[in-house]
Image (cartoon, rainbow, N blue to C red; front, side, top):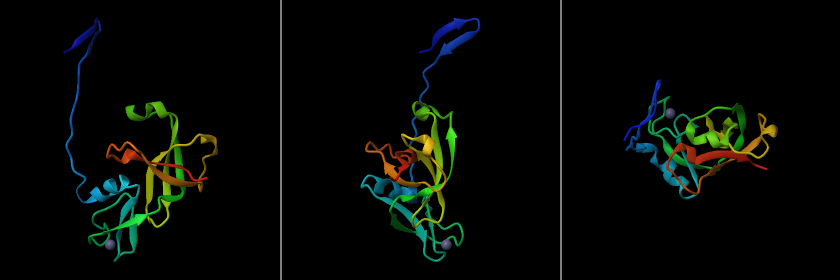
Amino acid sequence: MTEIFSIDPLIIKTPYEIEYKHSYGKTTPFFTSLSKGKFMTTRCERCKVTFLPPRADCPYCLGETKWVEISGKGKIHTFSTLHYSGEKFLKDLPFQLVYVELEGVDTVFLTRLKTKHPEKVKVGMKIKLKVSRDLEWRSSDVWAEPDE
Ligand SMILES: [Zn+2]
């Protein structure tokens, strides 16, 4: 039901909801491994490249990749401090968005950094990936924290 807040200018409040139903397809093991406290991603044995986010097929040789477990430990490749974000993360502002280099992974992974000391964040800082205990089955279930 639409509520009218003002006539001139006309300001209304209208309920708006969209329900999505989608599949993670061949990358499903990344998400199901999180529920077991593990980080799984894919590797092309032919090209000797490990990807994160996982890729079901290798972008170089187009061959099928295999699932491998990674430690989730690594270091910051680069970062940026966000002062604006989508609604989900407004309560966390400001925070750092980081590209991380992970042990055993050949690509960089983009994620949020949660830290009590944002003034200490720097390139090369050791981090570890963490997983939400309350999974929403989204990439936002994963973030990085300093590995002290
Ligand atoms: Zn390949």
